[in-house]
Amino acid sequence: MKTDRKVDSLSYVLQRRRNSRHITIRVRPDGLVKVSAPYGVSVAAIERVITNNKAKLLSTIDAQRSALHTYREGETFLFAGTTLTLKLVSSEKNAIAVTDTHLLVTYAEAEPQSLVVCTLIKELFRQHVKQRLAYWVPYWANRLSLDVPPYGVRDARSRWGSCSAKGRLSFSLRSQILDDEQFSYLVLHEMAHLVHFNHSAQFHALLGEQMPSYKEIQKSVFALQKESQLCL
Ligand SMILES: [Zn+2]
Image 1 (cartoon, helix red, strand yellow):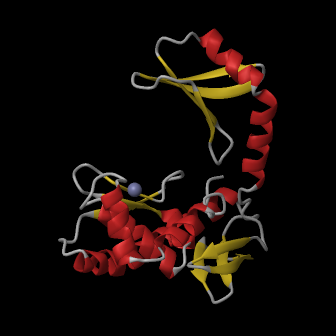
Image 2 (cartoon, rainbow, N blue to C red):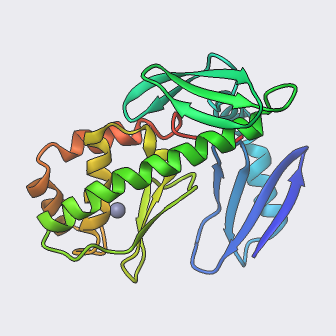
């Protein structure tokens, strides 16, 4: 159960969880505060925790928001491991193209709208991730002697990829910022979950066998978590 609440001028979303034993507070990349707590804990107790941590929370929200793209001319975006500069040009229709150095967006409105630019960039990223997956999923299926699983691209903010209990893989369109080595690792990681549905020692042994330098690559992917956010 989720509810929107406010304490001491700070908005947050409260999620009650049956299986959690602690109060956890998380600030999403867009600055939204999410609190999860067991059913037994009173709202007063939860809000005491929030109030006691308010200064720290406010500075985290600030840091998260300042790292977000504003979709203005000249902003830079990572794209398959290279840095591209956003160029906005007035035209008859909204469209996007990639050059060696730029993300070129044309806009039909009087002024470029951040939401329109963001949506175009996300769509572009989604298409490129699809193309890259069409290469890397069969590649790793072959290496791991697996059938090619069903997979898709989602606008996920916190996860790079996931593997469902039914064996369907999902990848975030944010993963378009990754270079080929990082992208390949991401696909290997999710494909390896079709063999070991956990992060056990066997799972890591499989990653190490297939990609000896996977630990450093994994670290470099985690380091891009903030940079990869495309939400407004
Ligand atoms: Zn995993």
